[in-house]
Length: 66
Length: 272
Image (cartoon, rainbow over all chains, first blue to last red; front, side, top):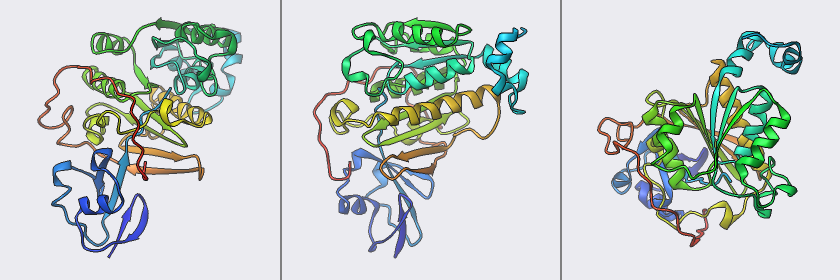
């Protein structure tokens, strides 16, 4: 099925959001995850299934400024 | 308050704009903006806001100018090495525009002084380089009900968002807490392309001016991410989070506190 991750269309297998992060080698502690414009609580990453057409944002921390 | 002839000339390109005019320029002249951090983001923001004629600019920074700062912190110059950043910045601002009152605080921004400082200003600009301070600025602005223009830069990427407390998503609506210490690299550890500070800092200044003037559409409920490698902006829609520990339905943060200082161990993953 097709989903959008950070604005880019991607083909993924039936999976949870946490599995998707793992497949991309992203430590869940490093990102805030938004699913269809709503923040997804970290404790729900493992139980939330990705559905066709979902729009996911993996938002990395960006801390600098000096 | 009436403008002198010199001031009318100085601000003529603003006054010509129907959205600004003499009335808007007076709003700018009355505005008080606090810039937290007189470094990469703070430098361009301070210079442009000063040029624009912002009446009062507050600068808080405890550091002195270091040689490694000059690659991007354009308000400081080689003769300023070793001098307090707030003093160096104040001199440049006053040379650029003597209309601006500059208040300096050569101090760290902490839970002890944050609220009092923020309350004395209309708008706050985040120009700090570490997560504990970014979260503290956000918390102080939400408690004091002051609009905040958040910015961040790292490597080739930058991010800006405007936060109008309890009306739009705050920083904690998105990132509840700072990342675990050592997991995310800072500029000092990972590097940053210097011009990024100018791009992001001037967008922050634009947002502040729009808020003062009450024009346009603020960058609220949106993260504007910039990728300098591709020269591409991307907008990510956000919204207030009912689970936000600060401004959500059942807040767990009810007073200011300092997060633990960051440790310096870098762990860079393939996606970082």
